[in-house]
Image 1 (cartoon, protein in one colour):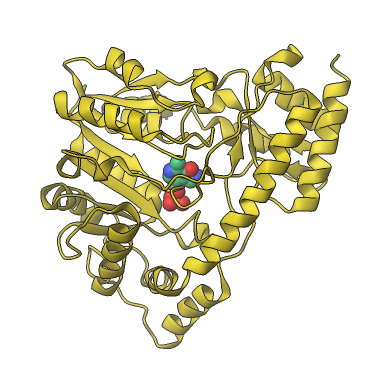
Image 2 (cartoon, helix red, strand yellow):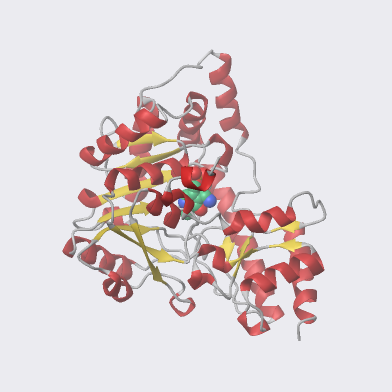
Length: 389
Ligand code: PMP
């Protein structure tokens, strides 16, 4: 069988995730300290797990409405209204999905016509480019820079807009850089979206994990943006619920309806057990989010301080749970540095170019790992850098 000829061109053209390639090297090596996987080291709070268990105990093992349990959609609309200051109708403007992953996929598929240009800031989450390409869109990355704290500058975005531009994806705080956007920059970006009639998909998955004192603002709340924004959010990061696979999309009814059609025929609904857990998370889980954030902040400060002591330039990220140190001064590229570190000291971190070419020269380290492990990892990194002289 000539398998390559059987595989759709747009799928064949997408490269495998650089994170996955790197982590195949780590598989089966128990001695490695991993700063690689972008996942909280906490388990979901016990009362949330208990809600899932209780839901099963009560025999709730059925499908739900395609959009998700109405009780959960009401809780989501309430939370999004309070946190982001944008109101959505739980009956027609909230769709419960299998993680932000599914929400992103169906948002792109609902909006893109073949050849439409989709802008996004880079370095970025590994799914954006493949998600756009598999929906037959044209990916248009806009490089961000260390000197701007890896935030998207409106003037850089403006240069990348063409008559074929249709969509802008934003993600603040950003995976992999921890970047946050200033209110002024967000306003400039919003004006461009309105002027060029772009739909904005804003991936808010790290919104609760912001440390710079500023209240998190979503672009959805800015003038002229609610009508042209799909707000994506979920439970994976803030509530440490990655394995529950639960997220949501909030958008004006016609856009929600379009996404719902894809969701209905491909997924049917999100798992009911996870929906029960998510409802509990929103109703009683916010104090735990605060505690986890405080713990990440302590770890962020420690890691940034240690990189500086080691002599590696590392900007202080305003959010998420990643640092993105600049390893160029060591004379090594991202991959060389990461492979050397793994070989010499059994510490795994992801080469920055896994998040797009503009990430080359950097390393993504996830600090959502036990403090003792982090301390040891930084000692090992120091020893490794000492050998590079
Ligand atoms: N967006 C970003 C920026 C992410 O970092 C992740 C997970 N690493 C996701 C979306 C997907 O999250 P989930 O499907 O678990 O909700």
